[in-house]
Length: 373
Image 1: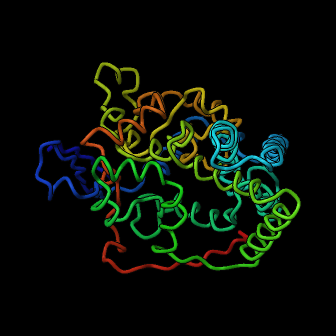
Image 2 (image 1 turned 180 degrees about the vertical axis):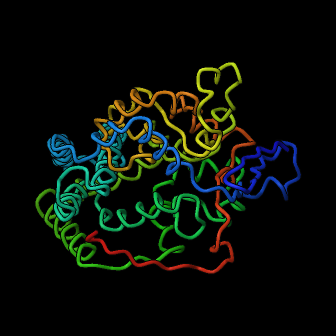
């Protein structure tokens, strides 16, 4: 076992990573830590050294035009396939190449909207998210925002961060077939897991999201037929399945051995002033070309450090604060992540950092959020 000690204030915490040949009882457990999540500390350190970073925060008006273009593209392809069978190669190919790529962009546009990064007023972001939701086929946007806010505020918390796999997922799916099934059906896990872990307040925004989406689906079927709606549903499934862009789901927070090698002392020579706690092995960034299709979601350490900086300015944040980000482990390929996760024995659903806290008692915690904040 390798232990990484970290001193914070007057207390010393130990983060233990099990060896690959450890017993199954040791391997089948999450990486528990008492350390606070790293992003708040790094944000404060960056702002202290580079106060100009604060000028990067704020919404990005141009994003809405790109989103309108993606939605229009999906509507056009859905209409084009209205007379094409969903079990044909033509239908599947277009759903995978255009539909899944577009709906992944739509998922992540809703992600930007959840941080109020398209419009100045929060309500306008919520309403536009409901419109953006249309090609997904099922109501999604209203529930995503509060759950995603919890992910940011309580990163690694067993009951408030629903991005974390549950113990039962770890037990049942930490084998090759289980991991392939998980990677193939990620969209279902992310959609269904939250409701079994943490409850959020149901608001008029949720109701409007449901009514608007169902009304649109009914109109689509009447005007264009079931095949068009099937295109939306298939696109959404494939967007969260074995698709290159879907690699970001696993790449962002899973501790994968191929991408999580500590940097050598020589590599860190130019960064000796960066405190150890600011070099976590918990959130990972990807700087490859697929960021162009996904609103720079690959800049994930940067995003967690500054959730209210829009996608267009995340590269500038990394440029300004390069010494804070260069030493961090990076993901080189989202396709590679899917392969390493599924077929490398040491990579399992247990490879996530969870935080020790009051919630580690096994008791479910409910939370109510004011969605007008």
